[in-house]
Image (cartoon, rainbow over the protein chains, first blue to last red):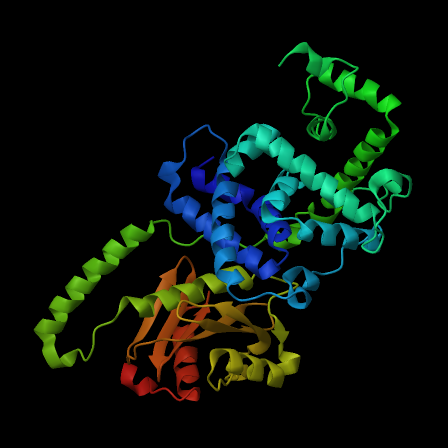
Length: 181
Length: 259
């Protein structure tokens, strides 16, 4: 398979990741477009037989972080934050619960959200995530575990409940759901 | 790592538990964590919650819908510097020509003009394959669409009708342009073929009417009164050209200058 064809074959996954990362379809489409262009323009920088997917995601996240900086200058208030406009999670699983997960996901920092999405959604190994994020495996592990715990606390303790974790595991609002795929 | 880490008695930390959820531990470590979870209710609940979280995230973001992935976003294969170099060559050639022909060539083409046409072409490639969300605001709300985009582009826009060519307005969207926002209006005929009209502010004015080709797509573009317009579509050049001439005059341009 040619390099270009290989890049194209990863576009659906890139798009999925970009959508989850930004919470904004149009922005995600732009990011994927920019990533594909940059990848093709810099194909010589890619070492054959290394991980193309991780390389593409690295490009995408650099672009995202650059664009985030620019967009941050335009203040985004909670009400108009992009994920507010996401379409309702579809079918099969409890929509309200997924909304909570969605909210928790976007309340994480970008660093945390990236690693959660790479490992949980894109099924990256820690090794691959470490390449894509440009941090050691140990950092992937600690960032991920902290992010998970933060999400769990957010989902188990309502925003109003000040209860310590003590009882939190006894009344989890998060239930096992069926995977829609 | 010493043996303590694998010892069943030592409580696994958050990182270990998290790695356990992702099957990233060695066999020994996995067995040790499993054993520990049988005794530690709270850790077991944590792990269960993280598993549920993972499944929920996958349900939430995991789908790559075929429907949405039909678009092909790639444009020309040469890198930007090659294209710049080629453009520079043409510029030099053009400059030479302009000097030679003098008054016959009124003005030189700046690089800026080209880039908005390219953006229009890419926007065509990205958005026209969309079946479910081709536009942000549909033609049903045409008044709102025009008012909204006019406001964002800071210019009174109008949307020419292409009915006589069998294309009706689908709607429009706002896009980031190079020198500010850009608007894309999409048209569709009965067979589902689509054309787009891309509009954006362009700092310099020029009268030329030009063609940009990419694959089977053609983009005719021109600048009029500080605004750049680009009409893109995969139809025959001659046909697109005559539509573009009509659109230009409908938008207050002077297509006779191109003949």
